Length: 174
Image (cartoon, rainbow, N blue to C red):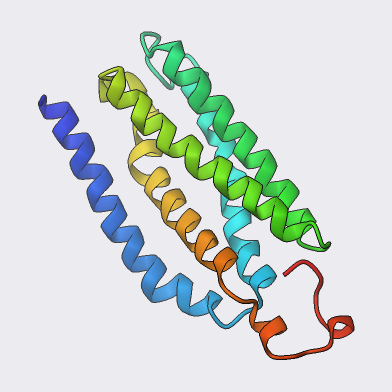
């Protein structure tokens, strides 16, 4: 294993630990007492920034030698995830909210995992990412952790519904 691959793995690992602490100590305690829809909103807003993945296609940000077979799916997969996050965010106001969050969350998580899989399969050299290295090492671990939170919320009972509040007095979409 090359030193650059080892540094990438260490960077991603430390990022998972650091973001895991932030989410466990500060984010989850703020979300867990909210209705499902209210808890999902900030997580979906975070994912609306996934358009940043388009930078893998920008000369000068990423190396011109970064394989388009990796950069294209990573960039456009992130763009689709950002659009789906915004659609799901708006959809939380309707009965389509939860299904839209499922669509976004499955797509978004699969997109990130596929990018890691493809990078490994292609033996992608981390230096080819250029400034995009920081997307992979800082942003992606947070995104994967928040996908996990969204799955947890999607699979849990909505506290508003569980409390027996009449449907007419609740926010729709949770």
